[in-house]
Image (cartoon, rainbow, N blue to C red; front, side, top):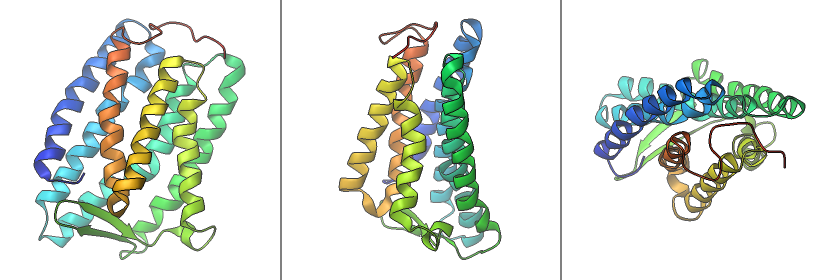
Amino acid sequence: MCFSAEVSFTAAAILLPAGVAAIQRACKTERRYVPIAALPLLFGVQQALEGAVWTSNGNSQLVAQFSLAYMFFSWLAWPVWVPFSVYFLEPARRKPLFVILAILGGIFGGAQYFPYFVHDNWLVTTFLGQAISYGGNEIFDYLIGRPAAYTLYISVVIGSLLLSSHSNIRIFGVLVFMVLAVTYIFFAYAYISVFCFGGGLMSLYLVWMIFGGGKQSLGPARPI
């Protein structure tokens, strides 16, 4: 994220063990919570990759490789994994909604991510003092425009959380939406980096939830 490699690696050092602990707890209690419990771990991996981007500054080849790995999470992992993880928590009658969102996220994310392998110059990583900007060309720039594309992305990722029948998951969705708002207002110049960093920190709420915090313990979802 912004600031430095130390910030990214520190975030990873917190999120990785927290995610492992959450997964272990979910395995012992309610296994259907394992995918959502894995989010802090996945965010930790992404933050470690951004730390590697920072430390590779000056080596364009390494920066490109680590940036490509980082953007896998931004474009492809989150719009698929988030609705996928909520799917397992929902009653049968609501599961098709999250299947649709995961498929939509996969189509969108794949269209955004895979062109990077064909067009070497499409992913541009820029170091802005105390921030990293991941910019360049995106396929939807030529189809529906970037604002519409990002609205679709947000609708899939955050919408999957807000549409959950679990109050704790909806609360997590609100927290992520707050991160989005702060990013849009104050950090638009490095929005991908800041949004993913903030989302990673907010995922610690899920660890707290898995270990018994929040309005609902691990158990059947309540209909809304």
